[in-house]
Figure 1 (cartoon, rainbow, N blue to C red):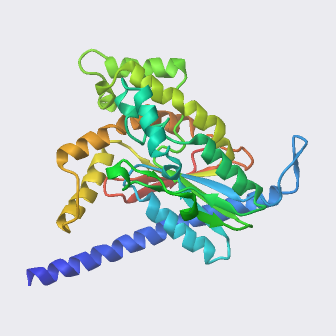
Figure 2 (cartoon, rainbow, N blue to C red; figure 1 turned 120 degrees about the horizontal axis):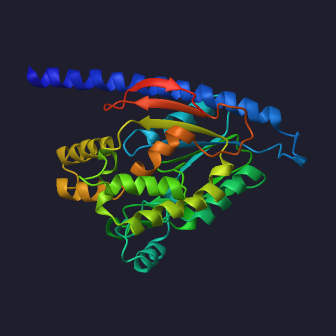
Length: 329
């Protein structure tokens, strides 16, 4: 009897989750449709004397913490938009990670920085490849190869998959969905970075909001911060609108990832131990600690083509439920 009830409970929870995802896709999908209509109304007009490309798709950046449901959201949005005859392509910041060889070279060049020994942080992506891919999609006049990355290669260190295995789009594309856990993170200026370091090194253990950054040197943290400048210059200005899956506390990333690992272990699949998981997650958390405050205060960098607001924020609780929506920026 207990097993039956347990099965019924799993079915019930599954239906609740499905409905929550459907609601999330509907709300974000409606936002994208509005932004697409706005961009299409601007096409073939002039802006500061420059003629806009009348075929350019809407590019939407999606930021959400690891485990927040970004991949599920993108999958749902692709279905939502294609069902309305809107040609849509989605890819991830993860897809433009450096090749395995390039990551090894980066790690060797920064042997004193643990944050750059493995993929993930700002500086471990091929920004030129991302820029080339987005600009080709914006031209929308020929087929575009979309990069892909396989994290399981090289014993889990990952590598970019061979070009013949990349997804190829055909014109014309209406919407591009570009997602990533750190996509949109902004560099702190000198004053902001100095304030952040003060919080990290404050006598008595520093701010609880910066606790994961204490493990790393000021130079380690500065490397990551300075690497973000290139993202700001080459990627973000190509993005028209943003969907922000906001969390109030970066520590939730560990909790969500542990849930995923526990599910893998329960089904007999390989999973990380608690110690391995802690080591893995803590490499990413300093980036959250540096970035989330500025995102809340200043918002995202975008193309500036569309009228405000250009960002839809969903506020997630510890269970990934959306507790509020707003258009702050």
